[in-house]
Image (cartoon, rainbow, N blue to C red; front, side, top):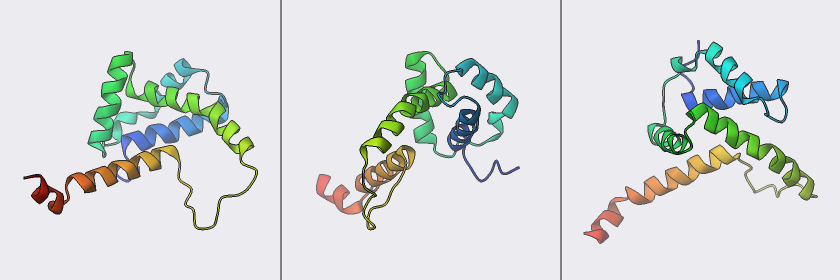
Length: 126
């Protein structure tokens, strides 16, 4: 089935991308939630627990589910992606890596964890 290979957050993002083919502006959140129920998203494990819990906390504040929160964030990015592409008249330099927003957040979280768990920093703090 492949559910062991990707986590639940990535699976939700993949389903939002599939839904975006049908609904390019991501306007039909009710239809997406019905579609997501049929996909049985619960079979995917939560691999990044810290990220899932932060999304869950934010979703509870907004009184929505995590999938709805991810959908709303992606919907907010639809117009911005187009305006960013229009504002770029030149291609990025060859030595620059291009990553999407989720990958950037993950890299920042990894960097913060590495800094926090660095043994040299622990010695200096004590």
